Length: 298
Ligand SMILES: NC(=O)c1ccc[n+]([C@@H]2O[C@H](COP(=O)([O-])OP(=O)(O)OC[C@H]3O[C@@H](n4cnc5c(N)ncnc54)[C@H](OP(=O)(O)O)[C@@H]3O)[C@@H](O)[C@H]2O)c1
Image (cartoon, rainbow, N blue to C red; front, side, top):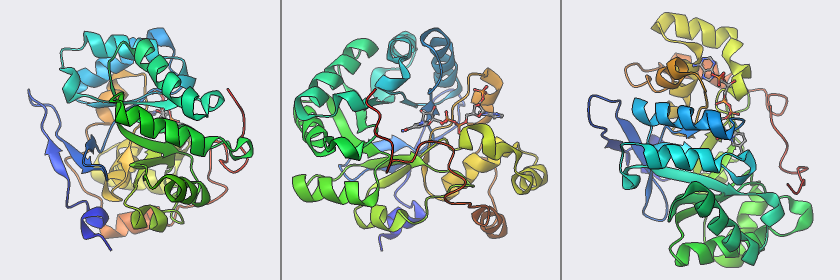
């Protein structure tokens, strides 16, 4: 068992100047590091996303998670280029859309993302979904490996991969993804996949960390939030951090964007962590698509 992985002892504090929150850095298996808490932009249009990302960067977020399929890379890129923070202080992630699954398509697709974002490299690029019925995800992974060799991206990973997809790309290419970005929140905790991720030193990145909002009304979360004088969203984000997951909540509201980052001044007790562990309702708690059956090419 890798204790550093388990306890997050390898984390460094990502200091942001001007009294902004310090966000721990998580080490990846390729030697790079990602802020443990980042900002998601799914379902935010190109115009609205400029303001949201600008607000997030101003509040202290340094990691932004977009995707080709969100159709907002242009707006995300504009906010990044206009920010008063150097490019190398930001960690920018995008994801390959399923219709570009394929080796050549993945490299060209990544170049398309860079063009839309107006950036000359990405910090991380993920295969968004394996879409297993098309059997193109290994070829796409070979494309991401090539793109990394060409310097278009620093770290490569996957999203929505099940154990069999992970083991196949590792077996066929010898290259491990740095993260698997998967739906994870108190009502869908993804505990079964954690052992295999740990075995391969792959980090779990929680998407829809608030259950796309659905987990915020949970009575147990509400009670814990009241005890700490924090909001339900803050308690859930804190749970992800203490579970040593990478977490990327989304909001378009400036007060919530700031609130979701204000999670470093309290700690959940062992009893509170145990109470949240009991909220798992796998598989009913899933709010998004099931990767074993999601095969849309979009
Ligand atoms: N790889 C994938 O397949 C995949 C799939 C889904 C998501 N993701 C990534 O994960 C990110 C986060 O997931 P998500 O967008 O599904 O949802 P989420 O972060 O779990 O929840 C967002 C929802 O909660 C609300 N919210 C946020 N902060 C709040 C607060 N402090 N108080 C009350 N409500 C709050 C937001 O509303 P407002 O915006 O109105 O504040 C929004 O409705 C995405 O943006 C995307 O980057 C990846």
